Length: 266
Picture 1 (cartoon, rainbow, N blue to C red):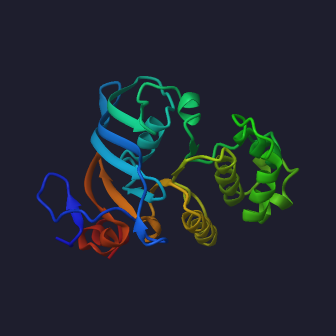
Picture 2: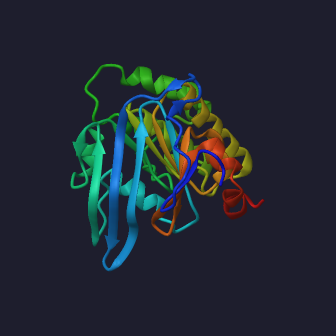
């Protein structure tokens, strides 16, 4: 077994203290804790006793194949309701038990969700989509933050008056990320940001996530592209058919032969 990699249900080496790699010091307090989470869609159990945590200033990745439960995880912790979904277990964000809360109430705690499939408002302009990301804010710096997003994503500045539905897939993904950032969140959830994108755009998306990491943003990332996700993550979890089977630092999982064989094609 690779040192520093824990396998669920088996004894393992003690996990290293969570660290913020870009600052070389321990990460901050736990801002999100999931404990023994079970999620059902009717009689189908999608998550089977899942437990993980996210600390302030960390990038935490959850990797797994299609259908493993990654999107269900993010929808559950962000309060996205779906027909017939039943939740058991604990979800704690900023010290609040939220597993029964609605999405808008969880968002007020400082959680922003950039969803799978982008979900931009197609008939609204790029600028209007960014304004909607700041809907819950009451400060006077929304315009300033829009300009900052145009600097971070120059293509959005060029397309600011264009309807979002006319953007390319990569441009819509950047808009979804920028819209989430407009909330000035304490925790950002990115769901499959590489999905359906050309390799060059995938590279650009992960470069942006790396910039956010360098800025000290707290990120929970779920992603099928394990190499990119593990390469950027401080810590990571492997999710298989609704259960976490391995956990460790991003580097340790990236080097683990079982992960290489299952997810990296090695």
